[in-house]
Image (cartoon, rainbow over all chains, first blue to last red; front, side):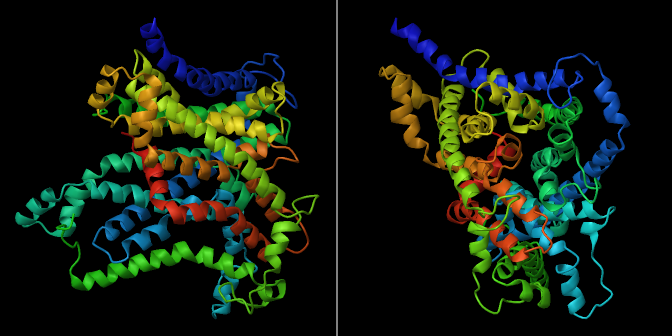
Length: 292
Length: 289
């Protein structure tokens, strides 16, 4: 009697997690998919509309702008964070004095909300009183830095603020990876007469490939989901010049009364993240050495 | 580690330090500019440089940001939003951490057939774009009578945080030697006894990681806050965003900066006090295993 209860107890304890968790993740996912196939506008309704919302979505200039911005932001944010992160990690790994303090400084933005980051950078980047005025006051009267209000350049402001927030995170991951590399490999290469830059280029950085890959994964999915930073920094403006899929989805669903269209854009975001993450999760779970 | 040779010869080391210091200037400058701006008055902001120190420690902008700045139609500053966030964060963090610990315990030390697959399916919750849950979830909250309430936000944060906290505890408990648990089972210890007597006493570091991770995420959340809250339950990130984006004729950047610092302060304090746990949470979320 006790035995059978003891075998059921663990399953009973995790049941709520799987029931509620799967309902939240997969149940709502399917539900959202259904909504995207209806004609819902201000309120959800369940009149079948086929793929009309998707057709409408892909015909909208605003959606294409959002995708283009996601491309620019994703490439700049992920690439910039990775590049700065790996450089800082390699330099910090050279037995630097005050390494702990420097690490703390590089990483603190990650503890802040993107709304705080966005508010701060909005002040720094505003053309009237921010960095532009500062440089002009230094004597460069012709200096101009008004990207924040420039339709074509505003998205790069989001990139700058995003890198500021996340480069330290990439640094922390790379540093952890560097610390995990066996020193004897490096020493052996040195005995063989290889120069240090060469050792780093040929041995150390390739050994960081798994770290590089998971950092890329995390930053990319953050880029696709990115919402707060854009809302705080530009609110999608000027006009909809800095719209990204997440702000598009929000605007359509909650202020334009286009629920079906919003649901369709959310499904597209899901598909993108899934295409990126599922192969990664699958391989992570497959070759876990300490699995029992 | 200690034997790792220098990458650069002596001359180059100066360059290394120069780059590192330059980078820290890049990361610190915004914080510095926020701080000095928050102590200036409007006149000083217009006349002076972005980086100039304020003439005096004028805290007027701070008290405006806290208790009288306008965030749309009402002008009560960030104070009500701050307390909404506190009432939201405390239960959400507590529940999701305890829940994650129990799940992680089962999924690492009481595995059953199919539990790894189920866990893998749950893990997608860490990565999924929450945009797909927004529309259906607002209907669910309506049915539950939790629309626009702090309780509704707590529920959403618990569900959204579940995958992450379960992952933390599962991976941490996977390192507990099987022999330890088996020996206890031989001695007749049951499910709860093993949890209380053996597993929980080993858990302090991962509990810290989970608490800090959840606190930071939920305090900083904007998406759920802006979608699911009502006038009386908006969290601080929504308050800050409304405050900074309220269109008035004159932008009060000093108030904006004071408000931003207030909104960022709780997570910053925790980061400074317990940074190593925060970093572990970040790396555990990225590099599994």
